[in-house]
Length: 135
Length: 185
Image 1 (spheres, each protein chain N blue to C red):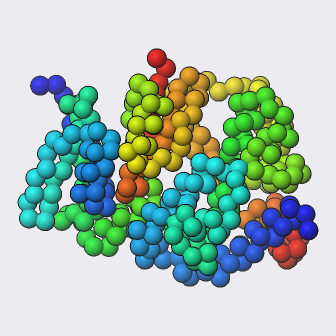
Image 2 (image 1 turned 30 degrees about the vertical axis):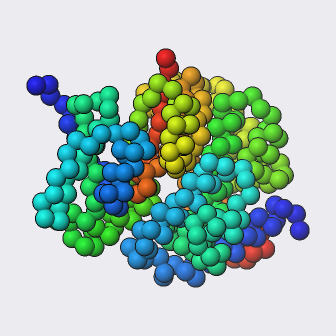
Image 3 (image 1 turned 90 degrees about the vertical axis):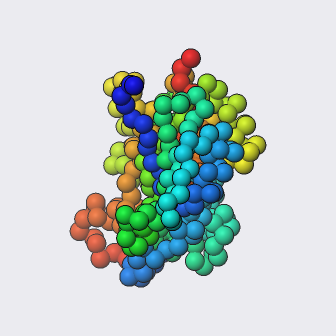
């Protein structure tokens, strides 16, 4: 077994909504979706990246008090979470496909120094960059 | 009234409004659904800062009434919407100065200014340098390409404008700080 980062979690406002977005609009696959009472462990994977999981967690975690949960929700909704990057072979093609599926783009593809990047957000407000690096 | 003085007056008015509403700034009380919609308005300004973003238009994007938009935005993001727009315009102008050979007049108009004079003055007030100086400095020492994606480098270089331009201008000129902000030319 190789060592490394296995999962990184995102906060989302609603796990059903996030699941629909990452699977239906971005083409991710569900890796784990397990409920334990009110708690739901939900992770998805990029189809080309079987060793990495993206966790989709609500801010209403059992480990978090109500006031903190509220602050976390606000931080996510204000787009203040750290940047996320998805690498693609063809940024303009991905942009067209994703936009047709209703992804909310914040920036059209722009070419800068040979790389092309675009920006989008998930329904919760997490901001992604779609980057096509030099070929 | 010239577009430039109208602009400064608008900022000055909003600055007074900021102080009036300071006691409302309890961020945790804003509904996350509202914040998400306000973020959408901010995103739209980010995508097209050269456009004319009236409070009415921004309110429509967010599904918030014109009357509530500016205050809600300020509570959420810490600066009034037009001042946010200003930082984006200056950021874009700096990029164009550094990365293109476009004449400064073209850059002013492309980044949403209606007069070269207002652009130059505001740019200087916000960044402390003239557009020409920024360009010259960059030409003298172009940055090395590095490992940070360009799109993120851009956002980090955004000017920080926590006070109104008129106020910043006043602080820098010192002495005459009893001057009524609304009368700053």
